[in-house]
Amino acid sequence: MTNLLKLFNFVKQTTALGQINGFLGWDQETMMSRGSIEQRAQWMGHLSATLHERKIDPRIGEWLDSIDSENLTEVEISQIRHIRQDYNRALKIPIDFASSLAIATSKSQGVWAEARSKDDFSVFLPILEEVLNLKRQEARLLSSTTLYDSLLNDFEPEMNSQDLESIFNRMRPRLISIREKALISDEVPKVIGRFPKKLQLQLSRKLALAFGYDFDRGRLDLAVHPFSSGSGNDVRITTRVSEKDPFNCLYSTIHEVGHATYEQNINKDFLFTPLGSGVSMGVHESQSRIYENQIGRSRAFTKFLYGEMLSLFGDFGIKNADDFYKSVNGIRNGFIRTEADEVQYNLHIMLRFELEKALINDDLRAEDLESAWNEAFLRDFGYPVDNASNGVLQDVHWSVGLFGYFPTYSLGNIYAGCLNKAMRADLPDLDHTFEHGNVNDATDWLKENVQKYGGLRKPEATISHAIGGQPDEEPLLQYLEEKFGDINS
Image 1 (tube, rainbow, N blue to C red):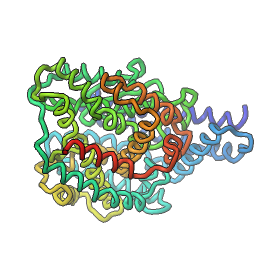
Image 2 (tube, rainbow, N blue to C red; image 1 turned 30 degrees about the horizontal axis):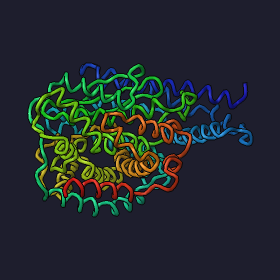
Image 3 (tube, one colour; image 1 turned 90 degrees about the horizontal axis):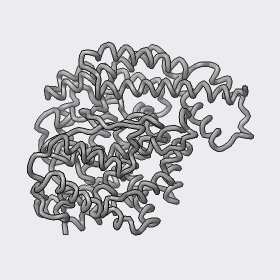
Image 4 (cartoon, rainbow, N blue to C red; image 1 turned 60 degrees about the vertical axis):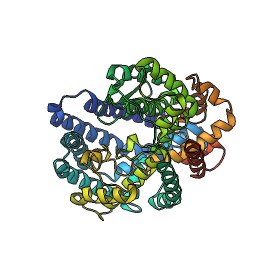
């Protein structure tokens, strides 16, 4: 057996163990009993330690050094690149630290859920401080640039906070302008009535199938914060239900299906390799956001969805498909990021980016986070936060240590804007099929141009390959200005 094959076989085993660890996380958020948190934290801590031991196994370095890159294929070269990056990163992190971080974030998730249900940030603060201190330590261990960029690199390789700030500074004035024009227009039509949980989940399942989700290799469950988990032949999605607001459930489902089908559609030859999952969170979010917004909230698709909802729920206060389109896309005042319109969503992300960067760089203390959040929200949105669950406690990310994750949402929106422009240039008749609930042409285009490649290329190169040029924020901003200009005309 060659050293190349030995290396790939070893990584295959490590990848399989990592997928098991991911399954434990899915179970914790969907099925696990509250009383099991301490035990689950130990499971995940010990498994994380085992995974880390494998990732720093000295044989990896020996195998890498012995491989002659002259005769490798593109796929093999890409695998080696990922393995070397992961190995060099893992060498900087002590095994005991990796275990402690896994235990802390597993516990923290449960405490966050309790604090959110009680609407009390003080319940969450002690474990948040523990997680935050560990993430700062991790950033110091990894740091080759700034502390924050060390963590950002885990989610979006080769991106940095300085470039993100430049992008956000260019976007912010135009986003605010769109919002201001929309908020002074006519009142957005609202759905009225009760939307039974069972019927919402029935329609969610139908939408998931329409967008290409394979239930033979996945499932749909409920969670406090919707998410997608897994890869290859076991990819699971979650949603949440409010019987007063069906859009929360329906569009959360479409969003998570975007993530899930990315994973399900990756080349099957990449399974159990470093190429067998999404290449970055920015690219991942481009799939979920284009499914949810440019496809799912398009005028054509909402015409189809309006008919489906009338059939299922009867009269719900919206008189026609045009008003339904305005209702789905309406720019309203609101606190919750996941329920925000396409314009204000990015402003939510910019707020979180500002705060988490300050936390990691030690410019903001955890005990001051709630007040800093409330001040920033009032500054950016113009009205005060009414309670912690609508403010600092609304997102799960910081509880599980995902510092550096948030900006990838807006980066995903930018990528989605570029992909939408290229896709519609290739497929000019998409709206005709969307009106009938058929999105296959769009999802097939995304599969062939983005999803099937998995981690083969670097993140920006993945998008550049799909669109035939360099990505930037202009297509997204033009799309938003045209769409909301039309809605509010």
